[in-house]
Length: 357
Image 1 (cartoon, rainbow, N blue to C red):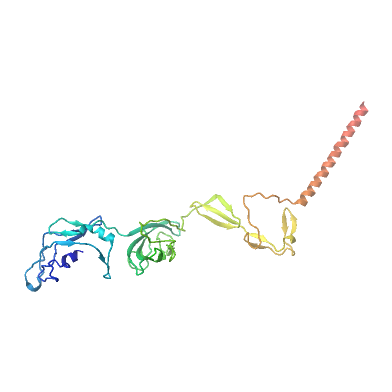
Image 2: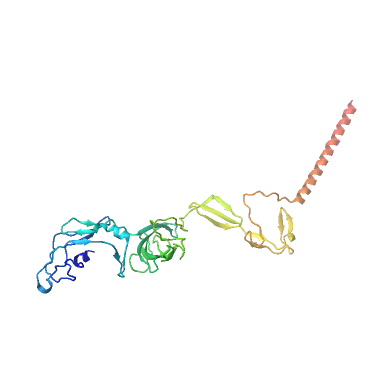
């Protein structure tokens, strides 16, 4: 902008560039303020050019010129002029004539179309690291979509860049969107992560930002960027809670850990035979395999005709009825014998009492 204001404007209306410098305005200064606005000044001065000869050896006719602004459009790298209401509104403060020596003109603040989010990842030791992903809008694609630069960063001394170019903890990729806002594609999809803290090097971190052609992940829309949800399948290290162990219907022994995760730490096997009726009862609710029953086949509960596990449940009855009935008969006979003994003793006492009388 500064270069064009100094050398690219036909100030005297001659239709061409004057070799004596009369058609340039070298005092124009364009700066960017600390809060993101463009500031242009047109001082009443002609900068010195010591040691620079005048073209043609003539007189130096350089002088300040008034500048007239009317920002209505912008031109892209392909030379295509396009209107942009947001752009012209930002530079509306430039419109009009900026006379020589007059006060500065300044645009409204410009903001970079960017968004960043922190994602938690975990190494092989369970240590947590923050993966920062920043998206910066770059350009419009041929089909009317848009492309964003994706800058992925991890705190040092961790490394994710294995190309040998640039910082070891930064990877630069892209995210492209279709003209309906759906995700077209993104790169990279995996990172080679080395935490350099004693954990395993070259761990593969998979980035899942959505499905191509759908809206199930990253989407582009005419609204402020925001993070609606994120999920990570990593976790910190944890200890098994001894009072939080249970068994599911498949026989998995599930243990809850102090990091909030629950995993199957073991599995109870279940045996089956081809012919249950062919088992030989050996007492104590136990059975023995016979040639008629077939061999034992061990497997997972709920598969191959096997039953399922039921935990924290009271079984209605597992009594051996034949043995219990036999024991009941023995007890009954003993009771009958005892009752006869008591009856005999009573008769003897009655006889003694009558003899005394």
